[in-house]
Length: 137
Image (cartoon, rainbow, N blue to C red; front, side):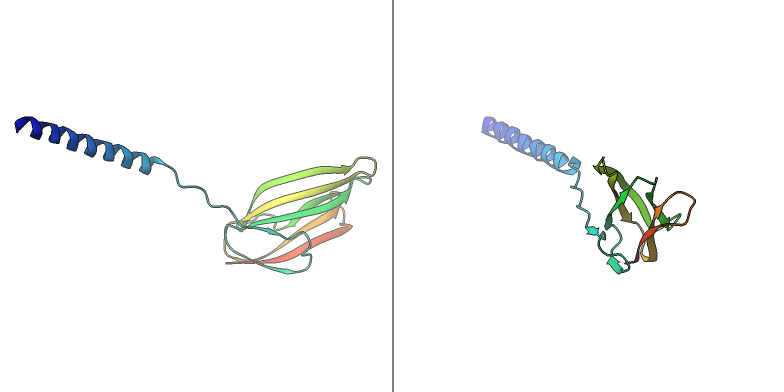
C-alpha cells in the first residue's frame, strides 16, 4: 500500500511539474503582431481619405529625372499624425529617366490633416503636386 501511494505521489508530482512547464512555455510565447491595414492612395489625388490610427498610407508617384525633378513631402512638414515606415525610389526606365517614388506612412494619431507631395526642383516652385485630406479616427 505504501508502495502504491509512493508511486501515485510521484506520478502526481510529475503531472504537476509538467503542467507548470507547459504553462510557462505558453506565457513566454509572444503574441503574433497584427497585420496593419494598408490604404493605397496613389490614385486619390484631391480626395478625402477615411483612415484609422495604425493604418499605413501607401502612395506611389511617377517622375522623370531629366531636369533634376523629384517628389518630396510638402505637408505636413513635421507631423504628430504620421511616421515614415518606408521610402523607396525605383528606376523604371534608365533611358527615359523614369522612376517611381513610393512612401509608406503610418497614422499615429486621430485627427484631420493634409498630406501633399510636390514634384519639381528643390527650392523652386513645384511643377506638379499630389494632395489628399486625411481624416483619421
